[in-house]
Picture (cartoon, one colour):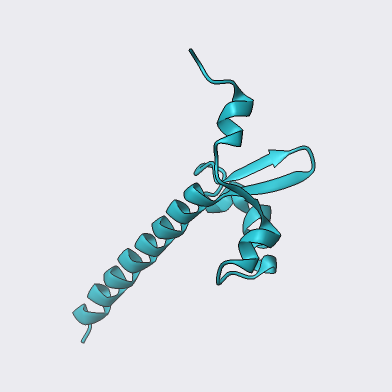
Length: 89
């Protein structure tokens, strides 16, 4: 039997931006900016943002996965830059 959309949403670990900011190293302004640019920064494709009317919630599990993905990209970018710099040394 398929779960309804409401059941799926209620089982997710959702919090408001204010609540996330209170328990994380990210400021509320930083979270608002990421939500505002979620169409281009990958938060929408990661399904980490849930909009219900005017309310915006963050799925903490998917948000954490997105943060890890950003960290991996940055680490790969740094190592690539370091390799390129070592060529010219």
